[in-house]
Amino acid sequence: MLELTWVTVLILIISGVIVGFINTLAGGGTVISISVFMFLGLPPLVANGTNRVPIVFQNLASAYLYHKKKMVDWKKGFQLSIPIIMGNIVGAIFADYLPSKYFSYIFAGVVVLFGLSLLFDPKRWLKENPTLQHKPTPALHYLIYFIMGFYAGFVHVGVGYFYIGALVLLGGYDLMKANVMKILFVLFSVPFGLSVYAIQGNVHWEYGLIHAIGNVIGAYIGVHYAVKKGGTFVRYIILALVLIVVLQMLDVITTESIVKLLSSGK
Image (cartoon, rainbow, N blue to C red; front, side, top):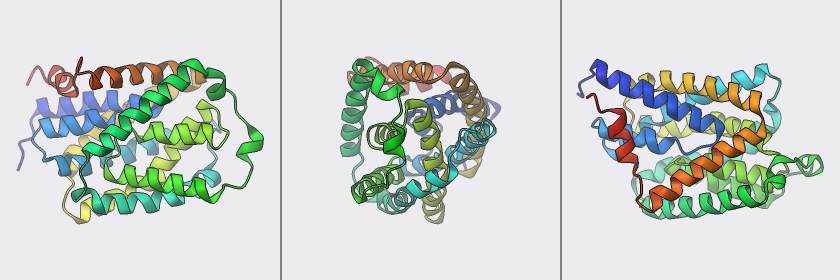
């Protein structure tokens, strides 16, 4: 049984605020959560499973806050989430059998391409295409969402970038609406993956629920700034996060160093 001290609680809540803010505006905060859990003594697979607990609460809070602003299309969100849910379940089942390093390479490559497109072609991301939004969703798009759901069930790290990219480039959403829809994808699908991890005994509920407190606070802050500042603000935040990913790829900074900084008082 891992010891739960006030320092551990502070680490979980403070890092949770950061993760909740990042995930609500873009994605990629999961890598911090998993690193924090592992730093506090959880095995990698348990850290991966435990990470799903704060994600559920964070996206529940974000969806509720956006709903109050009348910015949520629940029907469309659920429709597109169906293949993601299926992929999430399959990915979670196979999480113990597949090497995650290959997914890390895919994630890094997609995020860099995502950032370059966002940097050099901002109009494509900030202007919606209502005609494309209301067209029937092709079967190929459902397959793409299933694959993204599989990745989310397996690792989940940075899956928000995949969702936002697909919604803008395939679905005709602008960056702001895509971000809200992404939250619905996660909200509808993650509980299924979490259930698989829980059945396998790979969830530390105490750490997950404490971390969730910070995630919800971070989600509240993220939604507030997203609504107040708009799509351009979200774009700048995503570009900053993409830069951090690139710096991590080049070993200029590491997630471990960030975690140690957060826990310097331990």
